[in-house]
Amino acid sequence: MATVSMSLVFQNPLISPYHSKTRPLPRNQSNCFQAPTSTRTKPTSSFSSIRAQSGTAARKEDIVIVGAGIAGLATALSLHRLGVGSLVLEQAESLRTGGTSLTLFKNGWRVLDAIGVGNDLRTQFLEIQGMVVKTEDGRELRSFKFKDEDESQEVRPVERGILLETLANQLPEGAVRFSSKLAKIQKTENGETLLDLVDGTQLSAKIVIGCDGIRSPIAKWLGFPEPKYVGHCAFRGLANYPVGQPFEPNLNQIYGRGQRAGFLPVSPTKVYWFVCFNRQSPGPKITDPSVLKKQATELVRDWPSDLVNIIDNTPDDLIIRTPLVDRWLWPNISPPV
Image 1 (spheres, rainbow, N blue to C red):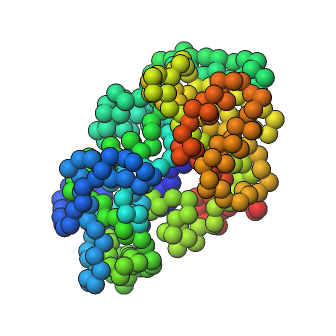
Image 2: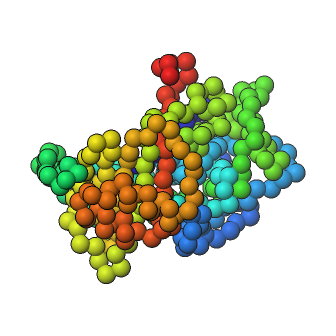
Image 3: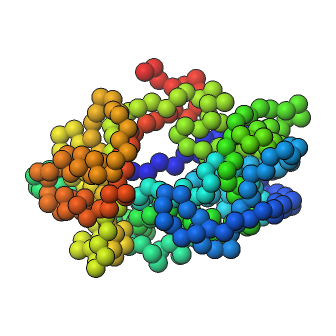
């Protein structure tokens, strides 16, 4: 129930992303990360960032990554492991560690191992053994163990905030520049890409990688279609059990008419859950977390009691509601609406 978007890549043939002699990034102002206390936090480590500075001439960069979400930080760390420097631009003042959890299968863990953070994350999250599928009245439709299907399978949920901080902490000092919202993008005569930031800063890059989410300004600049609402909304949350959660390490899926739900333990004290439901339009945006919790509970009031109890054990500020949207990746091939 999580989305990671890497929009596109511009590449100048004069530079290869695998070139090991890319010049190091300058190390300017830095600011320390703090432990997560809200939806925008700074991880505690030696990792630091460059603050936006206005009134300077266009700065030359080989590779610029727009967006310090999962895709942007993972891309920057992958390049760093290859000896290639990059600069990550993030419009927020700090890492946006809001959200809940995402579940990674073996391919995801292979990637995390390749960039050197897999083992750090494994120690913090449970391995999920199998899946149980039920109807809304509690009747079991199917159950199986993941390793019975594939002995090499590895399934673990990861809290989004912890994943972001783990990736960021592995980057060199100055690799992420916060408070750097993109205002304009254009090509230069020499084939490079000029990025104008809201604060007046200009960057000239040989390669720009867009990892700026579903509302990507870079995708819009390239002429990609606007994301379309797909007819579903989802509640998601992270329940907290301070003295220990009681569930087996399984992914539980529950199907009803026009909606489905699920939950799985993330750690010894936390359980991720979601409720996805059909809706003709996204409806008004609701910011009151107590209202969100009430609405999510009402959708599954008569469903298995475990799910209702999990929602009850979720702090109000850890419940989100999002309309689900999609966009075909390449321009001019989107199907008619």
